[in-house]
Structures are given as C-alpha cells and as structure tokens.
Length: 252
Image (cartoon, rainbow, N blue to C red):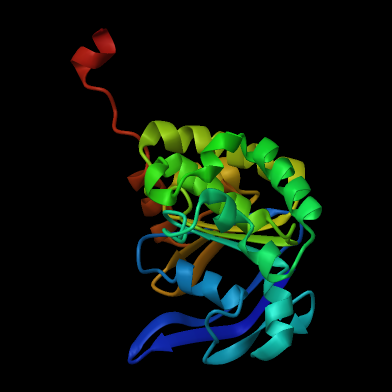
C-alpha cells in the first residue's frame, strides 16, 4: 500500500527522520514502535500528506503521493486518521463529529444514517451517547467516536497515532481487544503508532522498531527477540517486560 524511498524530514537543524526506505503491506496491520521522539508520528504524517519529506518520496499504491490540491484531498478521503485523545471538535456532538466529512461531501441522509449504524455496531458504542459533546464522554468513548469518524468514509487505510495512549489500563485493555477484532473483521491496511511493546505485539502483524529517526528492525516480535538486528532491540524488549514478583508475592 505504501512505499517510502529514501525519505527524510528535518525541523530546523533537528533530524526527525534520517533517510529511510520502508514498505508497508496492504491488508495488514503495521505498528510503528519506539521511544518518544523516535520519529513515529512524523512518519505517520508523511503517509497522509500532512507533512512533506525533505528528500525522497512516498508512494501510495505505486504512485507518488500528490503534493497538494484536489488529488491530495481525494487520496485523504481514502485514509482514515485518528489521534491520541480523539482530536474531536468540542463544539460538535458525537454524531456531528463522526458524520462531518459525509456532510461535507453531501451524502444523502439515508446513506449517512446507514453507515453510522454500521459503525455503532462495529465499535459497540451506545447510540444515545452520540448526542453528547466530547466533554460529556469518557476517554474510551471519545476514542471510539474518533475511530468511527476515521472509518466513516470506509477508507482503504487507517492511520492511528497512539490511539490508546491517554486511557487508563482497564479501558485500554478493553479497547485493545475491540481494535484487534475490528482489524480482523475489516482487513484494511492499518498503520498504528505506539511505544508499548505488548500493545504492538497484540495488535500488529508486523512491527517496525524505530530509534532517533531511523528504522532499527522490522518483523514479527518473535523475530526481534530471536534475531535482534542491534543491541537496542534487546534493550527495548527487556525494558518493557513486567517486573518480577518479590519473594513474599510469590509465596502468597
């Protein structure tokens, strides 16, 4: 679905992404993984044209990503995008947040309602809560609304930037299970950003571990564990393992 050829990005004198090449396959979930500041979100923004590379090019289905204008807008309608915390418009109800692009494209009311019903069932969101404003929703509910908005136009690609990062552990665990079910059911191309190894392994078909604007290793978690390409891979994995229980906790 996507190919990046010698793509780089700088902000002033700071390298957000050093020149890298990467292939993101169609119909699978690729997780961009790594510590804060490693370039994950910058890479994601390059995929939907919100940011332009300083060098190299981004290909979508074999064609260079349009630079601007109607071709870029048309491509973005094929790409759903959701941010950490939801990124919802606070002055709009859940319904209006979800259907904003459908209204902009002047979908018939019946088509919009039909699609909304599909998304409510898919995300297990209570229909009555859609009439609330974002401030009246829980963190998990806001994230589900953001996911529905990203899926409203039935895009080919779903880009998710730390979608569960701001949630408490119980809500996050529930949404992780729901997301994996949604990914399996829809079989869309998904690119997801996280710094959480367990979440990446649970949701992703393929992991891309990054550090300081570079791709360190790409593959399944078992490959990263068995054949690390760099000592950083092992350190990153070991740093996210759960702490061992104390002797008293084991005894109890």
